[in-house]
Image 1 (tube, rainbow, N blue to C red):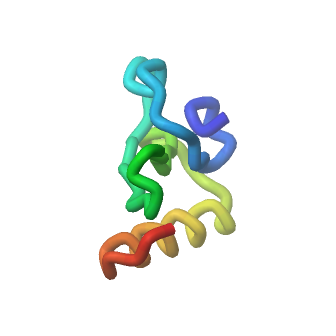
Image 2 (image 1 turned 90 degrees about the vertical axis):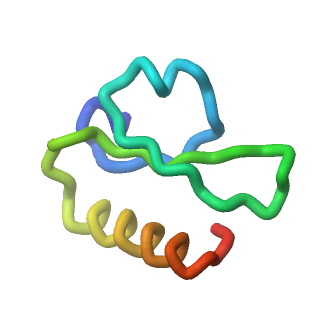
Length: 67
């Protein structure tokens, strides 16, 4: 849905994500057995709520917090 311009998504790592027009940002995960990413479509306008959530996640990750 993120690639279609419907906001952002937190999803497990999957090779298909690299074939899509997405900006992929790895998230810190307390369980080293699983990897998750925060994705959004490059250059697409996002709803205000999606923008705020993305900014929140970036701020948390820059502080070293695990999401």
